Length: 305
Image 1 (cartoon, helix red, strand yellow):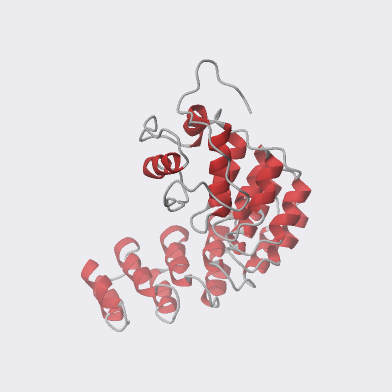
Image 2 (cartoon, rainbow, N blue to C red):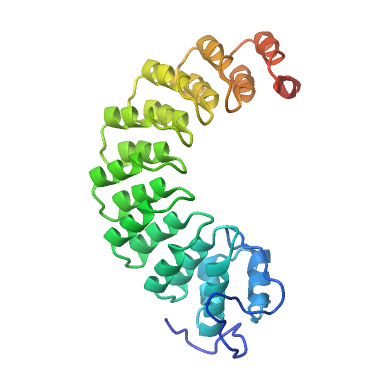
């Protein structure tokens, strides 16, 4: 752990470290949030026996580390708190403790791979990219994770940490949680995976929001708009209606064709997509209102128009 010059600020009084599997019993623990904001930071430091008064409104993890990083007892307490948290994204906080506060990366990795809430895969990927964790170990651990978005974490290993793109692609295709289609689009856009292979893989995915990723292939990677449109119409998960609206707004799809397809869609939020077609793509307002009034939640959007 790095040492700062001068007197430690915000250090807590010496106390017995928490037992394994517990957190320090200094009152009810705060709810674990996905990000370190001022209120959560103050509650956490007070809960751990430190002085929360130095925390300012614009703090993030670098400021937290500068203020409290030398207090090994407090950092250990924070680690135990996040390790046992059951809400928010505690794995990301543990990664931040490793990156900014001197927590051992192996210790962080062992804890994160046991977490079953939030997005532990992203935290493991970041440990590999920024804290020296072996990329192969990170990859094997991420493939086993069943919460969050492990596919995007694998993409980052390919983009930033040297994982072979083919191995990343094959692993992502097997993932059944999160949004693997978007990770495949990213491999196509940033890592050299061919557009055709990305498209064929994405259209077979049955979790997340594959329609959105097909739109991005059309917008950024040269996939034909007609092919994208026909593929999106067949998708049965996510929000394909919004992807069709995006094709109309950004890729030149005729808004009348978009409307005809969207009004047949029964998942996601087709009423909102029709509203957006009328507001941004030149669809006749009266025509949009007529269609919306036939839809279960259409009146909400009629009022917007």
